[in-house]
View 1 (cartoon, rainbow, N blue to C red):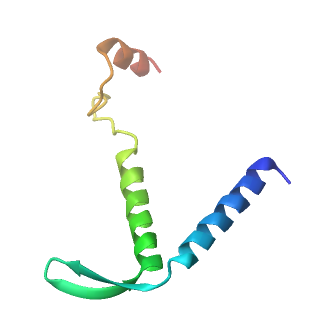
View 2 (cartoon, rainbow, N blue to C red; view 1 turned 180 degrees about the vertical axis):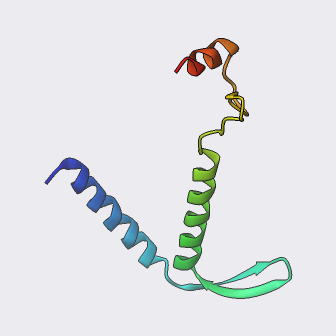
View 3 (tube, one colour; view 1 turned 60 degrees about the vertical axis):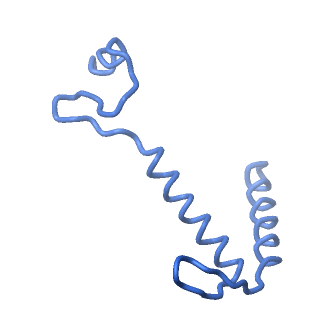
Length: 85
């Protein structure tokens, strides 16, 4: 087996064990709502929300119609070099 595969299996097993050790139900208050939720579900929801936010935050910036890179911290010289395609 490749080291990457072994690493992936180990990390998955460790995370799975950690999640299942925290499967008890807890009481939560959010604004005016009181509800009970499993720690496992709460941890998964927080992970998924964090993953989505991270993917959106790190998404590549879009170019405008004139080819200018929007929301960029690139210098003008770098922008010109990128346009030379």
